[in-house]
Length: 131
Image 1 (cartoon, rainbow, N blue to C red):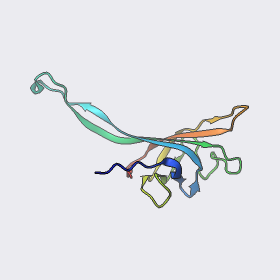
Image 2: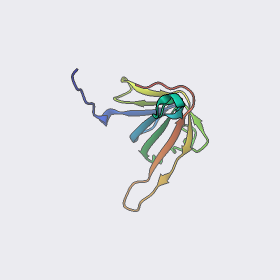
Image 3: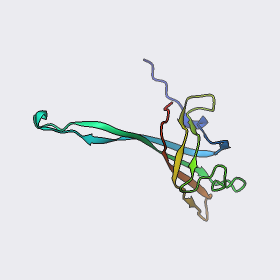
Image 4: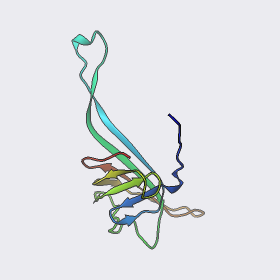
C-alpha cells in the first residue's frame, strides 16, 4: 500500500451554518478501559471498552466582525452546538462529523505584540462519524 501524506493547509471547520476560520483542530476519540480481570486470567489483567466519546479542540484567531461567543456559532461554555464538521482537505473531502457537541471551555487570549486568539474545547454528544 502506498503512503500518501496529506497537508492540513486546506483543512476547514464548520459549526452549524458558521464558517470558523481556524488554525488548528484536533479530535481525541476515546473509551474507558473497564477492568474485567478475574481469577481465570492466570495473573494477567483484562479489559473491555466502555462508553465511546471524543474530545474536540479548535484554535483560531478572533474575528472582531464575527464574535465566536455570539449565536451563531455560540462557542460559550454549556452551549450545545452542531453539527461540528472538521474537514481534512476542503469541504469536498472526508470529515469528522459531530451532530452535537457540548462546549466545555472557550478561552480568549490577548498579547500586546500578538493577535487576539480564541480556542474552544468540546465533548461529543451521542454518535459521531470519523473521516
